[in-house]
Amino acid sequence: MICNNVACLVLSELVHDCTVNNVPFPALETFEDRKMFPKRYFLFFDIFVRAGRHNRDLWKKAIRENKGANDMRFGPAIFEAHVRTTVRENYFKWIFQQLSDVHEVEDDDVKSFQIEYDELVYSDLPRTLVCSHKELTRFPFKSFEIGYGETSVTHSREASEEEDDNDSYCSANSSIGRATTTATATTSPNPAAEDGASPKRFFLVNKKVNNNLFNDIREQQRRDIKSVIEKAREQHKAVLETLRETILKTREVKKTLQDTDPMYKAAVADAKKSLRLFKDPYEEDTEGP
Image (cartoon, rainbow, N blue to C red; front, side, top):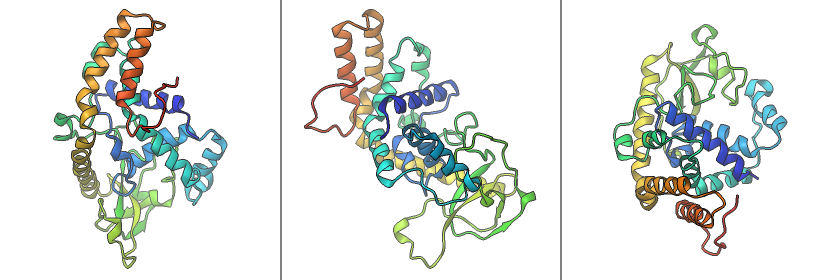
Protein backbone atom coordinates (compact mmCIF):
# COMPACT_ATOMS: atom_id res chain seq x y z
CA MET A 1 0.00 0.00 0.00
CA ILE A 2 1.04 3.60 -0.52
CA CYS A 3 3.46 4.93 2.06
CA ASN A 4 2.22 8.24 3.51
CA ASN A 5 5.75 9.55 4.01
CA VAL A 6 6.77 8.81 0.42
CA ALA A 7 3.59 10.33 -1.04
CA CYS A 8 4.02 13.37 1.19
CA LEU A 9 7.58 13.83 -0.06
CA VAL A 10 6.65 13.69 -3.74
CA LEU A 11 3.72 16.06 -3.26
CA SER A 12 5.97 18.41 -1.28
CA GLU A 13 8.37 18.41 -4.21
CA LEU A 14 5.50 19.36 -6.52
CA VAL A 15 4.50 22.19 -4.15
CA HIS A 16 8.07 23.50 -4.31
CA ASP A 17 8.34 23.17 -8.09
CA CYS A 18 5.01 24.92 -8.70
CA THR A 19 6.03 27.80 -6.46
CA VAL A 20 9.44 28.20 -8.09
CA ASN A 21 7.94 28.12 -11.59
CA ASN A 22 5.04 30.41 -10.66
CA VAL A 23 2.43 27.80 -11.61
CA PRO A 24 -0.73 27.35 -9.50
CA PHE A 25 -0.83 24.10 -7.56
CA PRO A 26 -3.43 21.72 -9.06
CA ALA A 27 -6.84 21.21 -7.51
CA LEU A 28 -7.39 17.74 -6.06
CA GLU A 29 -10.44 16.88 -8.16
CA THR A 30 -8.66 17.51 -11.46
CA PHE A 31 -6.56 14.37 -10.94
CA GLU A 32 -9.59 12.11 -11.02
CA ASP A 33 -11.20 12.19 -14.46
CA ARG A 34 -9.08 10.36 -17.01
CA LYS A 35 -11.28 11.33 -19.98
CA MET A 36 -11.73 14.99 -19.16
CA PHE A 37 -8.17 15.62 -17.92
CA PRO A 38 -5.89 12.84 -19.24
CA LYS A 39 -2.65 14.72 -18.54
CA ARG A 40 -3.70 15.30 -14.94
CA TYR A 41 -4.53 11.61 -14.69
CA PHE A 42 -1.03 10.85 -15.93
CA LEU A 43 0.35 13.04 -13.13
CA PHE A 44 -1.74 11.13 -10.60
CA PHE A 45 -0.10 7.87 -11.66
CA ASP A 46 3.37 9.36 -12.11
CA ILE A 47 3.39 11.08 -8.71
CA PHE A 48 1.21 9.09 -6.35
CA VAL A 49 0.71 5.59 -7.77
CA ARG A 50 4.38 5.28 -8.62
CA ALA A 51 5.28 6.41 -5.09
CA GLY A 52 3.21 3.58 -3.67
CA ARG A 53 4.36 0.94 -6.17
CA HIS A 54 7.38 -0.39 -4.29
CA ASN A 55 8.34 -2.93 -6.97
CA ARG A 56 10.04 -0.67 -9.52
CA ASP A 57 10.75 -3.58 -11.87
CA LEU A 58 7.01 -4.23 -12.26
CA TRP A 59 6.42 -0.51 -12.81
CA LYS A 60 9.05 -0.30 -15.54
CA LYS A 61 7.75 -3.49 -17.16
CA ALA A 62 4.22 -2.06 -17.30
CA ILE A 63 5.26 1.21 -18.93
CA ARG A 64 8.15 0.16 -21.17
CA GLU A 65 7.37 -3.31 -22.46
CA ASN A 66 6.29 -3.08 -26.12
CA LYS A 67 6.92 0.67 -25.86
CA GLY A 68 3.97 0.95 -23.52
CA ALA A 69 1.51 -0.49 -26.05
CA ASN A 70 0.09 -3.18 -23.78
CA ASP A 71 -2.83 -3.73 -21.46
CA MET A 72 -0.74 -4.31 -18.36
CA ARG A 73 -2.09 -2.52 -15.29
CA PHE A 74 0.12 -0.66 -12.84
CA GLY A 75 -1.56 -2.58 -10.06
CA PRO A 76 -4.92 -4.03 -9.06
CA ALA A 77 -7.94 -1.76 -8.90
CA ILE A 78 -7.97 -1.96 -5.10
CA PHE A 79 -4.43 -0.55 -5.04
CA GLU A 80 -5.40 2.44 -7.19
CA ALA A 81 -8.49 3.01 -5.02
CA HIS A 82 -6.37 2.98 -1.88
CA VAL A 83 -3.92 5.49 -3.37
CA ARG A 84 -6.78 7.77 -4.41
CA THR A 85 -8.37 7.59 -0.95
CA THR A 86 -5.06 8.31 0.77
CA VAL A 87 -4.44 11.33 -1.44
CA ARG A 88 -7.93 12.71 -0.87
CA GLU A 89 -7.63 12.34 2.89
CA ASN A 90 -4.23 14.01 3.15
CA TYR A 91 -4.03 16.47 0.25
CA PHE A 92 -4.29 19.72 2.19
CA LYS A 93 -2.38 18.28 5.13
CA TRP A 94 0.60 17.49 2.90
CA ILE A 95 0.52 21.00 1.40
CA PHE A 96 0.52 22.37 4.94
CA GLN A 97 3.47 20.17 5.95
CA GLN A 98 5.59 21.52 3.12
CA LEU A 99 4.69 25.20 3.38
CA SER A 100 4.91 25.29 7.19
CA ASP A 101 8.48 23.97 7.13
CA VAL A 102 10.53 27.04 8.07
CA HIS A 103 13.79 25.20 7.34
CA GLU A 104 12.90 24.28 3.76
CA VAL A 105 10.55 27.04 2.58
CA GLU A 106 11.22 30.77 2.65
CA ASP A 107 8.57 33.28 3.74
CA ASP A 108 8.49 34.78 0.24
CA ASP A 109 7.75 31.37 -1.29
CA VAL A 110 4.80 30.92 1.06
CA LYS A 111 3.44 34.30 0.07
CA SER A 112 3.81 33.55 -3.64
CA PHE A 113 2.24 30.08 -3.41
CA GLN A 114 -0.90 29.79 -5.52
CA ILE A 115 -3.45 27.01 -5.71
CA GLU A 116 -6.10 26.55 -8.38
CA TYR A 117 -8.85 26.90 -5.77
CA ASP A 118 -7.89 30.57 -5.28
CA GLU A 119 -10.60 32.73 -6.77
CA LEU A 120 -8.14 34.98 -8.59
CA VAL A 121 -6.53 31.90 -10.13
CA TYR A 122 -9.42 29.69 -11.22
CA SER A 123 -11.47 32.64 -12.53
CA ASP A 124 -8.71 33.34 -15.05
CA LEU A 125 -6.54 30.24 -15.33
CA PRO A 126 -3.13 30.85 -16.92
CA ARG A 127 -2.30 29.28 -20.25
CA THR A 128 0.40 27.10 -18.73
CA LEU A 129 -0.73 24.78 -15.96
CA VAL A 130 1.00 22.01 -14.05
CA CYS A 131 0.04 19.37 -16.63
CA SER A 132 1.53 21.33 -19.56
CA HIS A 133 4.58 22.99 -17.99
CA LYS A 134 7.70 21.35 -19.42
CA GLU A 135 9.54 21.47 -16.09
CA LEU A 136 6.71 20.01 -14.03
CA THR A 137 5.53 16.98 -15.97
CA ARG A 138 7.42 13.97 -17.27
CA PHE A 139 4.84 13.35 -19.96
CA PRO A 140 7.18 12.41 -22.83
CA PHE A 141 5.40 14.20 -25.69
CA LYS A 142 5.84 17.86 -24.77
CA SER A 143 4.36 19.24 -27.99
CA PHE A 144 1.24 17.05 -27.86
CA GLU A 145 -2.18 17.32 -26.27
CA ILE A 146 -4.38 14.32 -25.44
CA GLY A 147 -7.93 14.26 -26.72
CA TYR A 148 -10.77 11.82 -26.25
CA GLY A 149 -13.59 11.25 -28.68
CA GLU A 150 -14.42 10.01 -32.15
CA THR A 151 -11.32 10.11 -34.31
CA SER A 152 -10.14 9.33 -37.78
CA VAL A 153 -6.42 8.63 -37.69
CA THR A 154 -3.91 8.37 -40.50
CA HIS A 155 -0.47 7.21 -39.44
CA SER A 156 2.50 9.26 -40.50
CA ARG A 157 5.94 9.06 -38.95
CA GLU A 158 6.92 12.33 -40.60
CA ALA A 159 3.94 14.14 -39.13
CA SER A 160 5.07 13.88 -35.51
CA GLU A 161 8.05 14.69 -33.42
CA GLU A 162 8.62 12.18 -30.66
CA GLU A 163 10.29 13.74 -27.63
CA ASP A 164 13.67 12.46 -26.53
CA ASP A 165 12.89 11.22 -23.05
CA ASN A 166 14.68 8.15 -21.77
CA ASP A 167 12.81 8.22 -18.47
CA SER A 168 9.29 7.98 -19.85
CA TYR A 169 6.64 6.93 -17.39
CA CYS A 170 3.51 6.68 -19.51
CA SER A 171 1.93 4.32 -21.98
CA ALA A 172 1.48 7.04 -24.61
CA ASN A 173 4.77 5.93 -26.15
CA SER A 174 3.00 3.89 -28.80
CA SER A 175 2.00 4.11 -32.46
CA ILE A 176 -0.69 6.63 -31.51
CA GLY A 177 2.13 9.11 -30.91
CA ARG A 178 2.90 8.95 -34.63
CA ALA A 179 -0.62 9.71 -35.72
CA THR A 180 -2.24 12.71 -37.33
CA THR A 181 -5.76 13.28 -36.04
CA THR A 182 -8.16 14.58 -38.65
CA ALA A 183 -11.49 14.49 -36.83
CA THR A 184 -13.04 16.74 -34.22
CA ALA A 185 -12.63 15.53 -30.65
CA THR A 186 -14.94 15.70 -27.69
CA THR A 187 -12.65 16.61 -24.81
CA SER A 188 -15.18 16.59 -21.97
CA PRO A 189 -17.45 13.63 -22.72
CA ASN A 190 -20.23 12.21 -20.61
CA PRO A 191 -19.35 8.51 -20.23
CA ALA A 192 -22.97 7.72 -19.42
CA ALA A 193 -23.99 8.95 -22.87
CA GLU A 194 -21.76 6.49 -24.70
CA ASP A 195 -23.91 3.88 -26.39
CA GLY A 196 -21.11 1.98 -28.09
CA ALA A 197 -22.32 2.95 -31.57
CA SER A 198 -19.56 5.49 -32.09
CA PRO A 199 -16.12 4.26 -31.00
CA LYS A 200 -14.21 6.71 -28.82
CA ARG A 201 -10.58 6.62 -27.90
CA PHE A 202 -7.69 8.65 -26.57
CA PHE A 203 -5.44 10.22 -29.19
CA LEU A 204 -2.44 12.51 -29.32
CA VAL A 205 -2.55 15.79 -31.24
CA ASN A 206 0.74 17.24 -32.42
CA LYS A 207 0.81 21.03 -32.13
CA LYS A 208 3.01 21.27 -35.23
CA VAL A 209 0.54 19.22 -37.28
CA ASN A 210 -2.84 20.47 -36.06
CA ASN A 211 -2.33 23.65 -34.07
CA ASN A 212 -6.04 24.56 -34.07
CA LEU A 213 -7.16 21.25 -32.58
CA PHE A 214 -4.26 21.36 -30.11
CA ASN A 215 -5.39 24.77 -28.84
CA ASP A 216 -9.07 23.77 -28.87
CA ILE A 217 -8.36 20.78 -26.61
CA ARG A 218 -6.25 22.85 -24.22
CA GLU A 219 -8.81 25.63 -24.02
CA GLN A 220 -11.68 23.21 -23.47
CA GLN A 221 -9.77 21.53 -20.67
CA ARG A 222 -9.08 24.91 -19.06
CA ARG A 223 -12.82 25.64 -19.10
CA ASP A 224 -13.56 22.20 -17.68
CA ILE A 225 -10.98 22.67 -14.92
CA LYS A 226 -12.63 25.94 -13.97
CA SER A 227 -16.04 24.28 -13.86
CA VAL A 228 -14.77 21.43 -11.66
CA ILE A 229 -13.06 23.86 -9.29
CA GLU A 230 -16.17 26.02 -8.93
CA LYS A 231 -18.08 22.99 -7.67
CA ALA A 232 -15.27 21.73 -5.45
CA ARG A 233 -14.53 25.05 -3.74
CA GLU A 234 -17.80 24.90 -1.82
CA GLN A 235 -16.98 21.40 -0.56
CA HIS A 236 -13.58 22.56 0.72
CA LYS A 237 -14.74 25.99 1.82
CA ALA A 238 -13.83 25.60 5.50
CA VAL A 239 -10.33 24.27 4.74
CA LEU A 240 -9.58 26.84 2.04
CA GLU A 241 -10.61 29.74 4.27
CA THR A 242 -8.12 28.76 6.96
CA LEU A 243 -5.29 27.08 5.00
CA ARG A 244 -3.02 30.09 4.54
CA GLU A 245 -3.73 31.45 8.01
CA THR A 246 -2.94 28.06 9.57
CA ILE A 247 0.31 27.82 7.61
CA LEU A 248 1.45 31.31 8.66
CA LYS A 249 0.55 30.80 12.32
CA THR A 250 2.33 27.46 12.45
CA ARG A 251 5.43 28.95 10.86
CA GLU A 252 5.53 31.58 13.60
CA VAL A 253 5.25 28.86 16.25
CA LYS A 254 8.07 26.89 14.64
CA LYS A 255 10.29 29.96 14.60
CA THR A 256 9.95 30.48 18.35
CA LEU A 257 9.82 26.93 19.76
CA GLN A 258 12.09 23.92 19.60
CA ASP A 259 10.88 20.89 17.63
CA THR A 260 10.77 18.89 20.85
CA ASP A 261 8.59 21.40 22.70
CA PRO A 262 5.15 19.91 23.60
CA MET A 263 3.41 23.13 22.52
CA TYR A 264 5.11 22.90 19.14
CA LYS A 265 3.94 19.30 18.66
CA ALA A 266 0.41 20.16 19.78
CA ALA A 267 0.15 23.09 17.37
CA VAL A 268 1.31 21.01 14.42
CA ALA A 269 -0.97 18.10 15.32
CA ASP A 270 -4.02 20.36 15.64
CA ALA A 271 -3.28 21.98 12.30
CA LYS A 272 -2.90 18.63 10.52
CA LYS A 273 -6.14 17.37 12.04
CA SER A 274 -8.08 20.43 10.86
CA LEU A 275 -6.79 20.04 7.28
CA ARG A 276 -7.42 16.33 6.87
CA LEU A 277 -10.42 15.50 4.69
CA PHE A 278 -12.91 12.68 5.33
CA LYS A 279 -11.50 11.84 8.76
CA ASP A 280 -13.00 8.72 10.33
CA PRO A 281 -15.07 9.93 13.32
CA TYR A 282 -14.18 6.72 15.19
CA GLU A 283 -10.44 7.11 14.60
CA GLU A 284 -8.32 7.92 17.61
CA ASP A 285 -7.00 11.48 17.69
CA THR A 286 -3.39 10.53 17.08
CA GLU A 287 -0.95 11.71 14.47
CA GLY A 288 1.52 9.48 12.70
CA PRO A 289 5.00 10.54 11.67
